[in-house]
Length: 287
Image 1 (tube, rainbow, N blue to C red):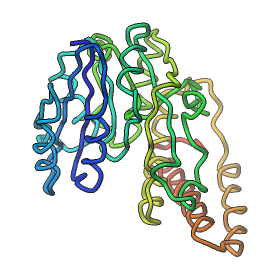
Image 2: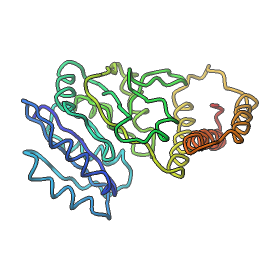
Image 3: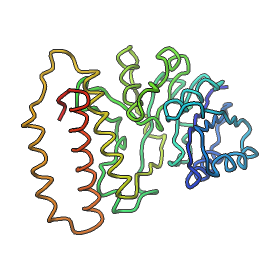
């Protein structure tokens, strides 16, 4: 088996069928399999997977319900894999045509890769307006120490032996386990390569509550990642510097005119609040 595609999910009945349909249309001359890891769903997700079993020559459903968390489901899926290489994708996104071929071929040349994101297909304009599309032209670069590239877990491909050697994803992290994973692999000596012809249609949060919640959580754990990887001689930023970022955010309130500007403001508010909470929780200034 050349490639194992790992698809974790938890209560994704709304979008899971779309991703499975996109994967069912993938063709590659080399043998590949799909590992679907159920993280304890209580909706119709399991029934949707069962319906698609006849569409795949090699589909394995594994139970990852013993511990909640996407990192855990990814690790369980990887342990069940038979492929020489692993490619991870998310249940609420959609792989573009040719994704399996592009990832499979890239992983015959490189040990660690990330694909390209496209955001227009699955997101309305008001949602796209708040984001600069990550991973469209290159892998993402972390702006705190250690300033290394990283990629979303649903876009990563890796040799199975390397995944096992690094110990998989850190299951103690509810988010940013993919950033931590990328850092550990690169610090151990393996470069992350960008694969522009492998494309994932990325889906953003499309409710204000979802946008706020994601921004706040990501920001809080960004502080944790900053503290974990910064060198002891890296100077801390000041509270004055961090709190000054609230001033332009408050000044933008009267300029909110539509859903797009509201979503952008909510994201920035959630991010600022999450950073503040993270700095207090982890006793680390990282504004």
